[in-house]
Amino acid sequence: MSDIEQKDKPATQPEWVKDERTLTNSALPSEEQDWFCDARPRRVEKHWQVLENFMNWARAHSLWILAFGTGCGAIEMRPLVTARYDISRLGMQMRPTPRQASVFVIGGYVSLKTLKRIVRSYEQMQGPKFVVAVCSCAINGGMYWDSYNTIKRIDEYIPVDVYVTGCMPRPEAVLAGFNLLKKLIREGKAEGQNLYADKFDWYKANQKQVIKDWNMPDYNW
Image (cartoon, rainbow, N blue to C red; front, top):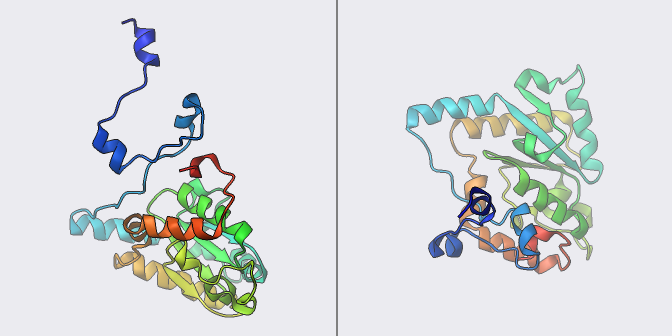
């Protein structure tokens, strides 16, 4: 077999890998199936405790935020980058894309339309990753709790590490939530990423129960 033929030949995987790790994008043409993620999230095991403590200290002091603002709760995020509150002194910065962020902040109500974007963004984030739900609407639906188009509990669809209640919570409250998240990270207690991996089938079943049209190739499974 020539080098070109060998290069073009798809790599085969053991059956146990396909069964336990792979989620086939069966609706896509064969040449496009590798373009999208087809792997289940996997639990991240802890290192030697001394090393883990150091890594958690470093993680807590370098948090990059992806802000997903859907309503009035997102307004309180803007003042945090001004000179008065200056979250950069806490080692925190706003980032434009999920792949650059480690903290997912959801501010405001969550509708059926925005939920699949939230799930998509969360799954694109690299680990370790953490979620902060800001505003009563993001936590329990708030004033929109009886709306047919509003998600009541975001933690049934993605894991949440810290809740910041209020309608709307002031910037001081959001800062307090971030400080709590930093404390949980240093103590090794912010385990939302592993929770998502452990209960992936439960989360995915909840997601698919309310979202009927994903319109995303990598969710065809």
